[in-house]
Length: 256
Image (cartoon, rainbow, N blue to C red):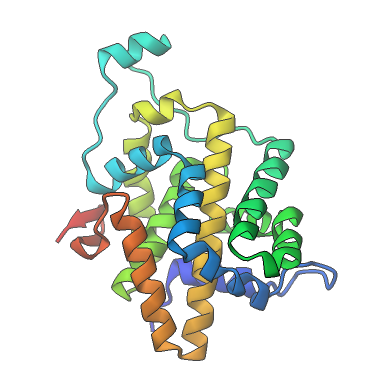
């Protein structure tokens, strides 16, 4: 039986077999937050934190419509015509703490009753740290915008299409996105701080969404899975990506 690459990552995140007993993260808390992340208003706010630059560059990469930066863009930022965007960024712990506080505050506005649990989960930073550590174990990095976008798009595609993506095709999609993003004017113009904020927000959304998928699959909750599928599909459609019209091939995403 094929095992979803992203689902395996999410399962490892949710189970956390090597986690100390004092850790504030547990599977029920992680999956309990998914409804917040996937509610239309909360999701919109989180995507705004990811930012238009990252999402526009990502959309072009998935749809294969990216193009080298225009001469005016190159001139504006003082780049040589052969310059490429730096996909890695230098992380700053203070940026993480501030961002996680902002995400917690955003979520608590939508569910004040869960404020203590949301604060415990988000302010500890454990979701992002575990997500990043798991990407590292798989040969990727949470400090690389192509790797983070790949995990987000593939996880979403698997949910919407009720299918799995093998490691070789995961790598193909990652390479496809990296090539496109390296020529993206949006990524060229992003500072390390902007890349970090966008990547961490998207990584947290990906981790929680896929952990919820894993939990619903184990429970055999078909109604819950359909609701999750619909929410993820609508979220990507709002970004201009119809995941039902895409295949994942040996060369990456391709139109059906």
